[in-house]
Structures are given as structure tokens and as C-alpha cells.
Length: 414
Image (cartoon, rainbow, N blue to C red; front, side, top):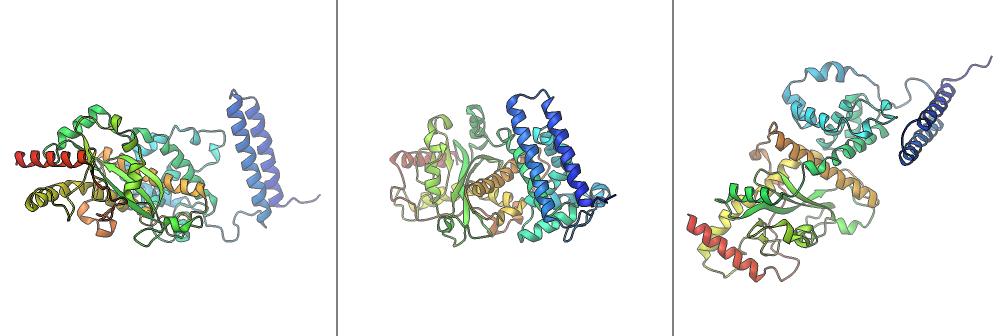
């Protein structure tokens, strides 16, 4: 009798699994659309397995160059870690990690017909948190993750990342959203003695790319002489991100990004009465964005301009602290290791940034994790004043009048 190789046995096993999965799907109560989607997933998994077998010489337990697997770290070491070491690895506290787990555990991506073949949700979440918080060479980071958590250094880590991202993005509206009218009034009341009627702080930051994009690299080359993606955020006084614009390449000016976002196109529904945002001089002075006086300004007196700018900058800097904390917690944003080859990879990079922003807000909401802003270096801070606006029409008469009114009120209150 011919003895079957381990490789052939595995191939036959996968064929049996394919037939069984297709039969179970056929007799299930799923609607036609879901059946078609899940059937495609089953065939895709089977095809990937067959392709993998053609690349593997031996059907043994340990393949050449594979990562030695051990569950000892997750089973024995991980539960015994103290809070400080837990935070170092995941960038969040145990309690926040549990909140994240509970938030996504019922997502369909972890509860489908093929989910039994995934690593545990806890392992997937820990791997992705570690990846988001890691900086350094991409192959080294992947190798470290594979060795630490006992997973493959091939596509498994990317598959985990995609699943966790998809689940977290589905709860985005619970954590990153523009405040409604009642909350905006509350924000005004809570910060009225600082900057009257200000509801937030706006600025842009660059997310440096580790590699030169292959698709239109000149567009990503910024004024800092690095390849980057732009992000523009509005945060409130608690440093929660309330509005986020992503997808623009590094060469695009902050003012252009702002002028093309909903804060301008839908301003009448997003601002009420005298409400406004504090921005730096990269932005045009309008009735909804107030900026400091420029060094060339001749309005009022020099003493009044300087006094206004000092108080204004004291609170506007919160958005820079917000960026600093975001990048300090999730070190991957200091140099994002995603090679821009096409539009899909741009979208993936934006999802990466957005997931970090959602997690940032979750951490603040939990009030368990804090990073002292005095520990943030200047290089971690997000934006800086830019003297050269994109357009010479850098202010409006409504904005100038409103800034003078704010100055008058601030002077009267002191």
C-alpha cells in the first residue's frame, strides 16, 4: 500500500473541510446575499491554502524559516504582568483593554462560520495594540510580534490587523463625532473664562511615511522635506478628537484641507451663534476660525495684540498636546510603515490613523490612562505656526470684527 505524505494528507483534509463548509452553508438559514459572501470567503480560504501547499516543500510541523510557536507567554507570563509592563506592551491599561475587548467581541467578523480558525480575540487585540504602539523597522516589528505572541510572521498578523481595524471602525460614531448643539453649549460654558465662545482647537499634523510612495511621490513630499500624509483634527479642552480629516498628501496646505472639509461646507449646522475654533496663522481668519494677530498686523496697539496672542496661544496649544499624546501613545504614527503603492494602501494608512484616534478617545473617556504632556518632546508636537498662507486673502472683515469683540470681552473680564 502506498504511504501518503503529510503534505498530501493535509491537502485532502482541506478538501474535506471545503466540502463540509459548503454543505453547512447550503442548509443554513442565511439569506442569499450573506450566503454568496460567505461562499466566496470559503473558496478564497481554500484557494489560499492550495497555493500555500505549492510553495511548501514538506508537510511537517516545523517549516524552514518558520517562527517557533509557544503559548507560554500568553498563558503564563501575560496574566502575571504588572500594570506598568502591560501598558508598555499594549499602550493602554488592563481596564481599557477589557473595555476594548467587550466593545468588539460580538462583532460578526469574530463570530462567523470560519472564526473558529482565528486566534482568540484577546490574542488578536493584543497583537494589534502592540503593533500600533511600536516604532522601528517594519520587518523587525513583525518578527518581534511573531516571536512574542507565537504567531506566523506571514499574513496572519496583517489578517489580525484588518479584523481588529474593521471591528473598531464600526464603533467610530460612538467615540469620534462632532458635538451636538447642547454639547457645544456645554463646551462654551466650561471654557468661557479662557476663550469666550470657543468650542475647540484646530490644527494639522504630518504623519511621516517610512518609505517613499511609489504612486505620485512628489505630492507626498512636505515642507519638512519628508514624505508624509496630512491629518487635520479638532480637539476639545479635554483633548478628545471631535473632527478628523484624513487622506491628503503631505504637500497640501492646512488651509486648503480646512476649506474643503465639512466645517466650512456645513458651517451653518456645525456652529451655533458666536461659536468658533482656535487656529494658528496657517488658517484664514473668519467668523468660525479665530487666529492670533500676525507680526505684521497694525490693528489696535502692540500691547493689546501681544496680550491677546499670549492668552490665545495658551489654550490653542491643546491641539498640539493632543497630537503629541496621540503619537506618544501610538508610536507607529511617528513613522508610519505603509508603502503607498495605490489608492487602497492610502485608505489602509488612513484607517490606521483613524483607529489610533478612536482608541485615543476611548482612553480619555475611561480616564484610566494618562500621559504627562511634560514628557512629550518638541518633536512629538503636531503643528506649528506657518507665516505663509496659501492665499493672500488671509482674513475676512467678519473674522476681524469678531476677534476684536473677543479681545474686548477678554480685557473687560480681567
